[in-house]
Image (cartoon, rainbow, N blue to C red; front, side):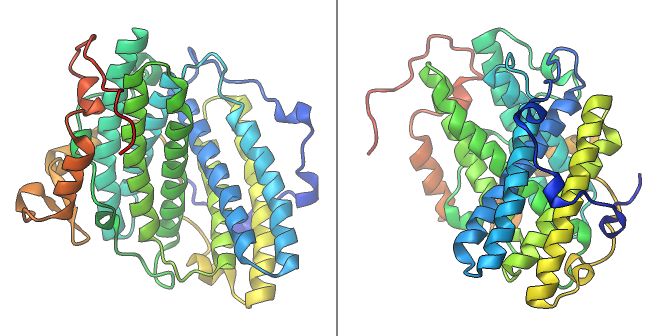
Length: 392
């Protein structure tokens, strides 16, 4: 597929990007007939946009220069509108669990695609490790959908991704210190490594946010408990992924790379989108993000006198992200790494980890006598969920 050359693209000027309420209200996709990868692209781009304006809010709280703050506010408003347009492509008749299945399909196929095309061997290992955990979450939520709604999750995914046990969720729970990872170097990492980093952090952060804002909307305690358990794993994933990035990047370097990443993701979505109407949205948003990137370049050059091509590490990203079935790759990783855990920032079979590993005690504490992710696959419809003891 075509390489993405951000510096050669023509962007839409920022002042032309603001939309009316009518323009923001796009027709949703049809949940029954849409390509399942249209749903996953909507979920991914919602996460990409959410991370963009959340990060810009954080930057604005840490940067004193008023001109930069005003600049960030302008771009942030445009990105907030983009996020609303994308999020509103989700149909209102799609249940929380159906959307959740979409989130986990994104997690599986996106992570696998990034890993298959990752230049940095260590970052690929980090991706492979979390891949098997998200793969298992898909299995747990699918069982819960059958239990709660009487629906087969394969009808949501249209069979594009296998639904079976991965690394069991009960062993995902680790001490926070065991989510620390080695990071790549901003001066030597490839453009693709930088883009993969920004993409996966955004996607996992959005998944965590979705589970934490929607789990409490269920009335039954098992649903609430399951979303709570898996949301905590997503917090771990965000922590490990953000640690892979080079924290010595300046805010303006990060701002520039984020804009490239947004444009790159929209470009990637447009390359494989089967719905002509939504493909046009991806292309429009890509041009908007190129406008944001050009704005970020001006800040980078004026305030830090830096060459954007050197910050990116090149003038192109060779391979776009392709959301498609990745069954063969997932099964290969599953066969080789199902029992892996992180130990001293590497990934090894759990049987090789010393008994004093902090995560063993942490796992026992949070699991206790009640593991929601196990109950949902046991088929015990009337099993009592403990609700009488709250807090410590």
